[in-house]
Image 1 (cartoon, helix red, strand yellow):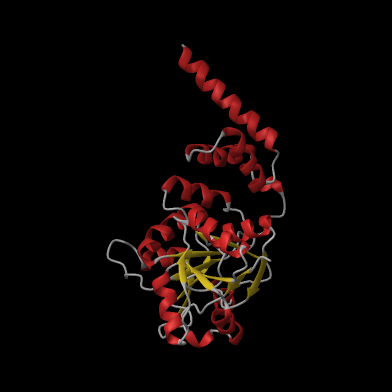
Image 2 (cartoon, one colour):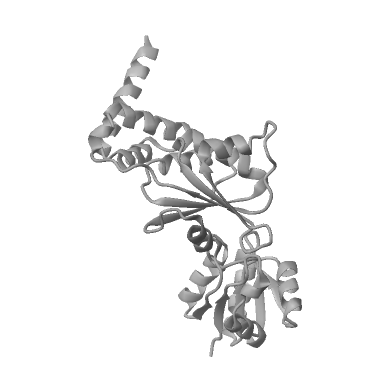
Amino acid sequence: MAGQLILVGTPIGNLGDISPRALEALESCDFIAAEDTRVTMKLLNHFGIRKPLISYYEHNKRMKGEVITARLLEGENCVLVTDAGMPAISDPGENIVDKCHTLGIHVTCVPGPSAVVTALAVSGMPSGRFTFEGFLSVNKKSRREHLLEIRDEKRTMIFYEAPHKLPAMLTDMLDALGDRRIAMVRELTKVHEEVIRTTLAQAAARYSPDGGEIPRGEFVIIIEGAPQSDSAEDYTPGQAAEMARSLIAGGMSLSEAAKQAAKATGLKKGDIYKLLVTEEKSVTDEESF
């Protein structure tokens, strides 16, 4: 009989936030799969728990995933943890969870702290509808493409960011999304926890690479959605085509760019596509002379 994979949420800063059920799961399992075994070892040592550890992270997830599922199929029980918060959320754990379901291995969860909802709750930003965008790509083109795709997102948006990448992130966001209200939540549940309610322009200036404040701690960035639009007439076909051209410049195909521009503006994809093709043909004809 196969064992089970148990997802366990661990504290995002304050060790006092661990639940009795989480401790019970860690104590009773056969082994623990951890994003960083050194981080998890500190947690286990704090609570006097001794268990075999196996590393499972982005760059070894395929190989170690095979090892873990083989042991589960043999009847062992495995607890999966990430460095902080819930595993499988913006985390390679999602891959092994999917694999376990495919193999018929039972997956269960001991819920725990999550930086996403904790930051949103303490921020005071609109929380009726929100979208979690995770980390932006370190690749500038991919990052720009991502931001342009969500420029007209009406829901509150939540991002993660490391301190050393924060200045560039804020600058790119201001350029793509325009100035709007944000909340910057850092060092959640720790001694220096801070909620900074400001605007994108003020935040970009505060953490400017040219003499600005040096960011410290891990950040959750919460940004208000785009203003509600009453009709698609707010966008002209030319503006939609310009949006699509920006996406194409970032490496997106013409068809996909037209689709994304249509989604953002409310205009028809076919109309935007025809306009782009017409412009492209016009440029080609001019170059042929």
